[in-house]
Length: 293
Image 1 (cartoon, rainbow, N blue to C red):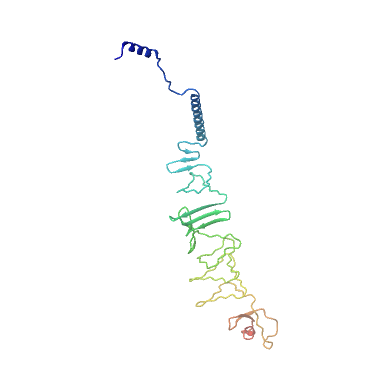
Image 2: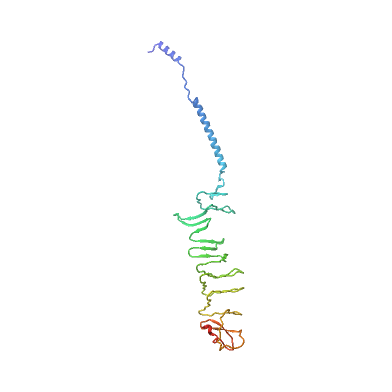
């Protein structure tokens, strides 16, 4: 047991000791550094916010889209001039109502149609050298759906009512041409010409050459043949002129004296050749048949 003196001494020792207080927190240079970093962070946040607002203002970001690019229910609507540096993939490209659509490129504009295997089916290339189209068929139609021009591997069809060739040399065909009607423009000449080969016109029910207000000329270098196998050849005109026919010469013994006759008769050789002979009281073809020799 503790004596009374010991208890008194212990109480005096405890009363003589002061209570100690421990400070909790950041003080000194650490506190100043913390405030500096907080201030720097707030400045960066304000700068970032200002830059974000500036970018939104410059790029014209709105609820509907960005600048000239608008987001609609049907897709994207782009207003003004646009430049695409990479390929553009779209299901449909159209302009605004009553506004044209321009496609411009410094080199060429290509439109390619591919299948599911990425194989080229149809291609349209427009460049500085011209327009190149590749496909199985090419058609040009009117607003009503009528075919004006159609081309494929088998044939080329011109569905217009009139085909007009404005070139000075006309139209050149390396193969045959099938048409029900060939007509020149009013007050213009129609020429069918083959410079180095022959010209053949065929029709199962006949060929009609008609010039209602002009002349018809058939000029050749060698021979002009009119042949009818089962029918006849008719020359129906008020005047028929046979120019530059040879004139048969009668023998001296059989020639008649007197003035030279200016009236001739047309004679025919056995080979079908025509010649002239001076007319007499009777036929003089036998006398002047030296042309047939």
